[in-house]
Amino acid sequence: MFTTGQRTGVDFSSGKWLLNELDCPKNSKEKLTEQSLKFFKKNVSDRVTYIHDAKGLLIPRKIPLNPNSIKLKELKDGTGFDFFINISTKKDKSELSSIELYQTEYGSEKNEASVTLEIYDLNLQQIIYSQKVIGITNKGNTKSMWETQKSDKLIDNITLYKNSDALMTGALKRIFKDLNKRSIK
Image (tube, rainbow, N blue to C red; front, top):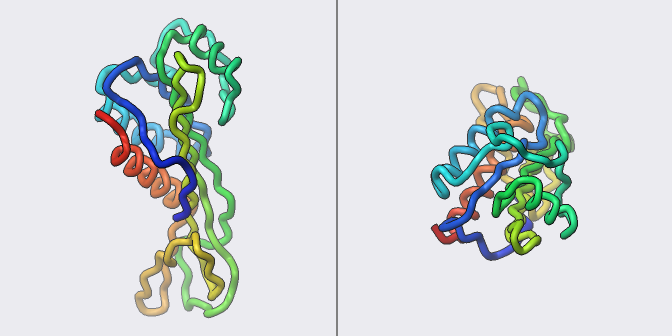
């Protein structure tokens, strides 16, 4: 996993938090949303609301990552919340199947997925937390400093690889672990 982001977390001890609809593939949305709500409810309890459970919000359907201060002011005015959580995922590559029979030694196929989580302080109209994690399952001998170990288990010439959905789940868990470690509760 490769992580880019900041070194500090957030203060979970106050404010109303709004979790945006996750920008991710449909087949992963329910699971990732459930994990996200579970994490934030654990940290801010009943002060977090999922965007589809909130009534009377006046905001656009899709909020881009890294919005400008004008967009953040519009979010504050349209929601009345103090903090806004935006999560975006991408399947960057999906070249390996989950199971390979009779593994070949060479090849550059890989599965790659990334997750970006941003938290905005709507009162200050700025990003207060931003983290991106990229998960990679790689086949072959080319290694780079930011890839994970090949997640395979060899069982009688059958190799199991993490698919892009599993990589997204793992990347989100890594972000939550970082956020949990660095934040005030």
